[in-house]
Structure formats: structure tokens, C-alpha cells
Length: 164
Image 1 (cartoon, helix red, strand yellow):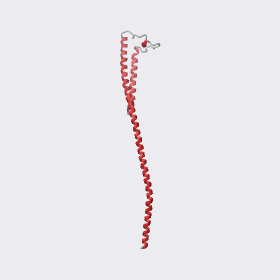
Image 2 (cartoon, rainbow, N blue to C red):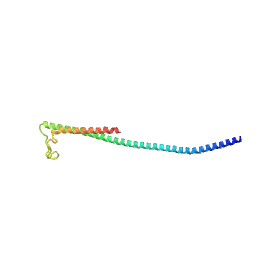
Image 3 (tube, helix red, strand yellow):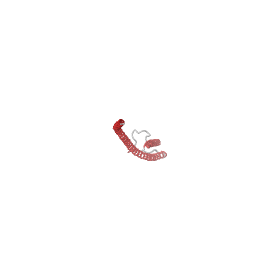
Image 4 (cartoon, one colour):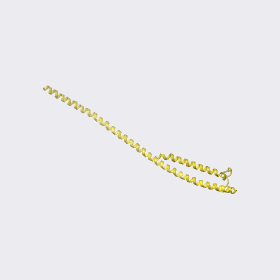
């Protein structure tokens, strides 16, 4: 029986040594695991912060682009309104000149030319330069140019508007 008691005590001591060794060895691995887990959490936090910073920068860029686009559209709308007003004013002026020239020709006389100043005939002027017979063509050309400019401005406005 004593032999069994000694064997049992030796087995208990052996088990205690094995348990202590196991605990000591596992604490090293546990510490390494916890360190790796902390590094992983720090990496994830840094990646999330980087993504948030990138999104913030993208948002600032988009806001700056939207503000610039709004300014450009405002400027284009002002230019469009000015062009429309100029076209209408020019059309009315040209219509009055054409009406005067037509009345003048209908009365049987030609439009008198001033001999001096700004209205003096230019040397070497081609026949038909600014003469009443050319007015309908000149008016049509001016109106066509105004309409073309208006179409270009409207097309540019439509191209920029979706960027807002």
C-alpha cells in the first residue's frame, strides 16, 4: 500500500509539473495571440480612418466642383440672357434700317451718302458694301449668327448642368 501511495504521490507531482508547464507554455502563446489581435485591431482602425479621410477629401472635392459648376452655369445663364437681349435689340435695329431703306427705295430715291465724317464712302470699298440692297442678306446673316451663338450657349449650359 505504501508503494501505491508513493506512486500516487509521484503521479500527482508529475501531473502538477505537467500542468504547470502547460500553463507556463500556454501563457506565452496567449500573450502572442493577444499582441497579434491588438495589432490587427490597430490596423483595422487605421484602415477605417484612412477610408474616412479619403471620403472626406472626395466630399470636399465634389463640393468645390459643384460650387464651380454653379458659378459657371450662373455666368453662362447671364451671358445667354445678354445674348438674347442683344439679339432682340439688334433685330429691331436692323428691321428699322431695312424698313427705312425699303421706304427710301420705294420713294424712287437712293439713300443719300454723307461726304465727310464716318459716313463718307471708303476708298476702295466694294460695290454693295453696306448698301440697302445688301441689308436683307446682312440682317439674315446677323440673325443666323445670333441664333447659332444662342444654340452653342444652350448646348454648353446643358452639358454643364448634369455636373451639378
